Length: 140
Image (cartoon, rainbow, N blue to C red):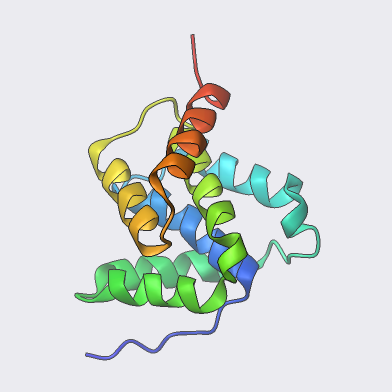
């Protein structure tokens, strides 16, 4: 079965990465949804983004995750839409969503590893991003 894919803007792709991390464990927590909304509302790259697009982008991600080759299609969409200089931005946002509930499950960790691989984030950069996300979202 072929998947009919929409075209994404760079900001759509960033939202899709955040939704993808949250949905990867089949349990989108409220804290993760709030983190996505907060980042879209307050991160400068989203200054002109239409927040109403989040719903349709989320539906696309959910649909892709239900397909056999959906993860490959998901990453193809992301790479096609994102300029390379935003790859690390996508990883920062993904790590912030994953860390937003104060815990990182195995499936989310695997998804972050796949994002690192697909976007060719080097190990030193990814370690710094991950450490920063943990520090920002640490709970007592």
